[in-house]
Image 1 (cartoon, rainbow, N blue to C red):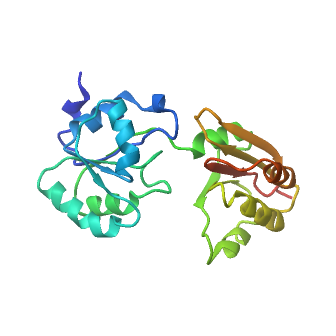
Image 2: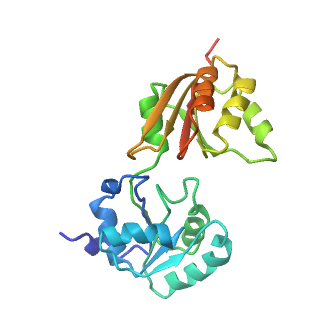
Length: 233
C-alpha cells in the first residue's frame, strides 16, 4: 500500500534526513517528500542534493533559524489553504537543535494535525556507543556561545545523568577545557565526530586525555560530546 493514502488528515510533516550517510533515508520519508505540496528546507542548496539523489521534485522553500519567526505565519496560512507541507533540516530531525519547534507549536495552536517521522539524529548513536548509562540522560544541545555559557556549564556539575552536547570543530577544544575546569580532568567523556560518514570517529577517555588528543589532531567535522554523570557518593 502506498503511504500517500495515510496523508489525508495530516497537514504538516516533520521529516528527519540523514546526518551524513544518504542510505539512512527511510522509504517512508522519501514517499512523504514526494507526496506533499511543499518542502521547507533549512538550506535549499544542501537539501537539493538529497532531493536530487532520491528523484524528489517537490518545490522547496527556505525555512531556517534567521527567518522562522517571519515565515511561520506565512506557512500557517498555506496550511489553511489546504497545502500539505514537510519540514526538513540540513541533517537529523527538525526541532532538535534545528528549526521546527516554533512551527510545530504554531500549527498545533491552529488545530492542524502534525506527524513527526522517526529517523536519524546524532545524539542517539553517540550515547549508545559511549558505554555510559543511557536509560536516563540530559540533552543540552549547543551551549550558549558567550553569555550564559559558564553558568550553564556550572549548573550541570552535580548532574548524575549522562550529559550530551553538540559542538562545532572550532569550539570543541574550548568546550573540553571548560569541562575540565567545571567537572574535573578525570571525568569520563566520549566524543564522536562525523557520525555515519566515511571518517566517523569516537574518542573515549578522561576529559584531559581526550582534550590532549584534539590538541594534537586538528578537530574536523561536527561533534557530539557525551559526558558521564557525576558519580553518586
